[in-house]
Image 1: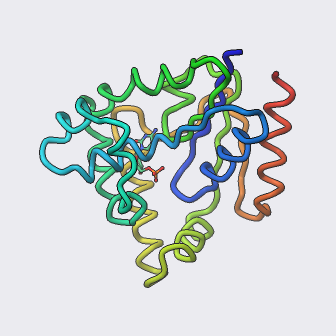
Image 2 (image 1 turned 135 degrees about the vertical axis):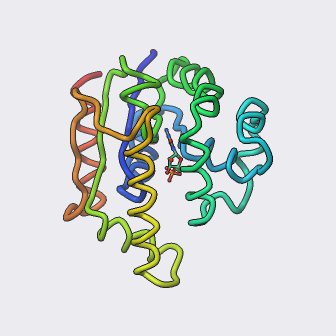
Image 3 (image 1 turned 30 degrees about the vertical axis):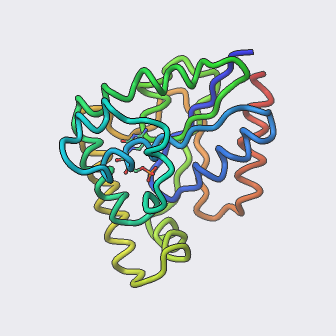
Length: 193
Ligand code: C5P
């Protein structure tokens, strides 16, 4: 079976948690596409060459989850040639036999516009910053500033800006417990299978 679930939304909205849970429930493969951009940003040097030469081992670096890696990712993600170099890998993953869940910023709009299910997962900046702060610690106001900066860059770029696809199902997790968000996502997928 070929079946794609596209999940988009801003940082720390719950895309990863929902994506992993949906994949586990239906036995689909899961790709956190943010890791691709994080790995390109972390490699240093020419980001286009880094994207063209990306190999799976690059996604295993221990330091890809930091705030700094997120900021570096969102800078290289604004470069059209970087994005172009990563399209084919993501599209192959999405159409692999057995079903796939991809989460990111442009999955439903650019990478998989024909995905069987599109979800747009969001939450207020304050809620997202608080969740990220629980993971990374430090100064919560600084984490909020980073979230807002990254939102502005991801939504404002010319190539593949973050936005909900017209046919995406919106899940706002601002005041929603995680198990409820997961249950909602699973029921949307189950309805379309
Ligand atoms: O999802 P995550 O926070 O790991 O993504 C890091 C950065 O990578 C995002 O802020 C965004 O700029 C970029 N990204 C993207 N398109 C995707 C996934 C991530 O531009 N599909």
